[in-house]
Image 1 (cartoon, one colour):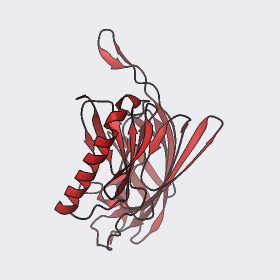
Image 2 (tube, helix red, strand yellow):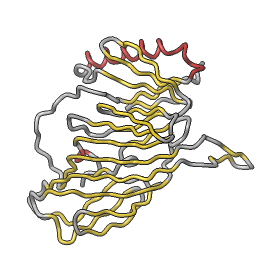
Image 3 (cartoon, rainbow, N blue to C red):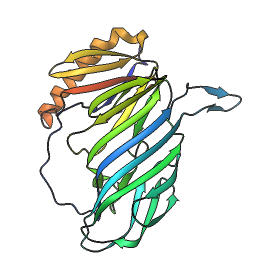
Image 4 (cartoon, rainbow, N blue to C red):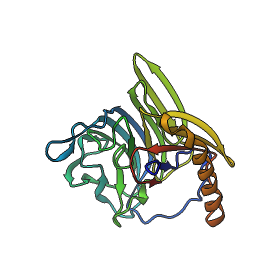
Length: 274
């Protein structure tokens, strides 16, 4: 049916190309992330009496430890970090600082300023109700799952780093992300852990409760499809489309950098590509 749409996210389990070291113009760099999140998704329910609205949102409680380095030749007194406004920052520790919410970001003031070449760890603790945390679709990405530094130019280019991600969720949910994965289950809860071997610009965690996992070859890629049971007949088409897409962009840009990929069939009428 026309309503079957794909959310395709670059969720590689291995093999990311190693980039040559490069100079950066950023004052501050985030170089490694250790993310721990406890999530509680809920069913997607909409009430229309009289205006339509979502009646419940899932909850997340998380902590991220970030290793940073001062790249500026002069002291750095301030920084901005993107953390979605649906989340409340409870604490930021590691160096003396104060912070305040400014719409979608947090403004950090270091007192005393961070000195050139300084390194250290900032630990962010935050919680709230991210928008896409439902049984039908879980999508937690940079700025939601974990905070990212906003450069003076307004982008998030200063966050290329290694990532270790641990997510705890009730049993019955399928999750995927970037890195080598390990999953354990006990007492009705499951813990997913992913770890990347190479620095990456960002990651996401995706999944849900209404899917089953199917593996298919897609050219040179090992493909995992999270598909709703009623759409099983489209699994091979998804694999064929993914293989053709990887082949096309390998010719257009550079060789496809992943040997594994996860594709999630989304429950809404538009596609997201990442």
